[in-house]
Amino acid sequence: MHDVDLLAIGETMVMVTPRDGGRLTAGADYALSPGGAESNVAALMAQLGHSTAWASAVGDDPLGDIVVGSLRGHGVDVGLVRRDPHRPTAVYFKDPAPSGTSVHYYRSGSAASALGRDDLAEWRSRPAAVVHVSGITAALSEQCRDLLRHIVFDRPLGGLVSFDVNRRPALWGPDGGADELLALARRSDIVFVGRDEAEALWGTSDAESVRDLIDAPRYLVVKDADIEAVAFTPEGTVRAASRRVDVVDPVGAGDAFAAGWLSGLVDDRPESMRLRMGHYVASRVLMSPSDFAELPPAGRVAEIVETGPQPGADDDRARDPRSDLPCHRP
Image (spheres, rainbow, N blue to C red):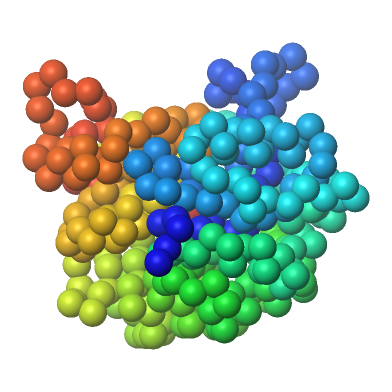
């Protein structure tokens, strides 16, 4: 039996971003909100109507209050979040610009960087159908890397292990984490990876060469930006073309795609529907200045992507029936 559909594990920081989408300047008006790859997936799946929990650590500080309170407000169970009185909540700043958004991180020595195997005893109290993690955790500290390897290799939490590669060169140093991320991907049940990040990490050229390299997961989903997403499954290969949308900010769209796809998996929808739901959820985040977007229930999303927009329906721009959107990394 599972208590929740999804248990997401990983660091969430406070994201500071200009409210008007402009540059970081001294006189700008800023919004503070949670920003974390794994908790983004949990929050968006909760919006779709699924039961989700997030396990992590934040500081016993006002920034930790913002993270925990905001995610609780999005419907995520935050009962497994440890408050650390000695280490701070990490923070990062988004600096939007016409040439693209740059991100500045301040996370060294954060509460989440001290996560370890001792935290598992509490986390086991919320068995989940899917345990969602990402490669970011492995780069935070040696202790976090050991924890993630234990979760993926030894399966102490049960459930299907969903792994988003989430390449972060700045966190890994000279080797880029290529060997570690490949080992984790090969031992997971579900893997999400961008075609471009796979090329940068492992020298692959297309979705099929990624599949040849990462040949063990039950489900491998390769996202190729504005071209397509390709899923390699036990039933065969399924492709879904990318959808055209007006992009406000690409940050967080990869997490959104994972949330939509995992929603389809939990509800046992066909693979083609999972890909289209992933694209739809990502489209909503692409058109938002934050990593989050309001979503209709999963059943309504399935109707939207199956039938296309209907006159007078409530989900305007994102319901473009021509295709499914580009899935950028968060």
